[in-house]
Each structure stands twice: as structure tokens, then as C-alpha cells.
Length: 72
Image 1 (spheres, helix red, strand yellow):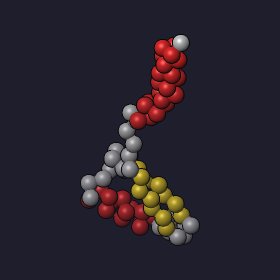
Image 2 (cartoon, helix red, strand yellow):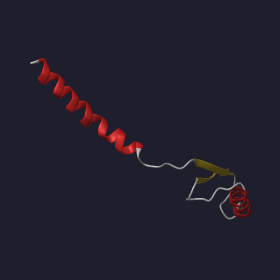
Image 3 (cartoon, one colour):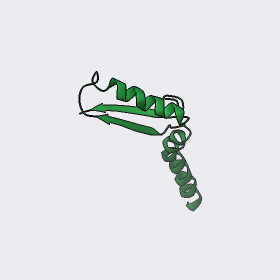
């Protein structure tokens, strides 16, 4: 009886851990936020300068860093 319970325990544990294992294999990029006050059009030059600074630091948006833009 203990052997069957142990085997059942292993099966349930493996099935419940599967989503965590699958999620761990995905490569995630670091996320950087750009927050500015005003409209998108008014801060276009600052957003371009931000992207240029990232590029000079060795980061390419979408390849090795994700950028989230927010305007207040």
C-alpha cells in the first residue's frame, strides 16, 4: 500500500510541477520603464534620446531589453 501511495505522490507532484518547469525554460528579457508627463507627441524627442542612450549602452529594444512606455 505504501508503494502505491508513493508512486501516486510522485505522479501528482510531477504533474503539478510541469507548468513551473515549462515556464522556467522561457527566456525573459529585463523590462525598463519610460515614464513622462505630457502627451506622446510632446515627449517624442525625449523618448528618442532614451532609446539612443539604451543603444549606446549596448541594449537593443526587443532583443535584449523590453521597454514599457507610459505617459501621465
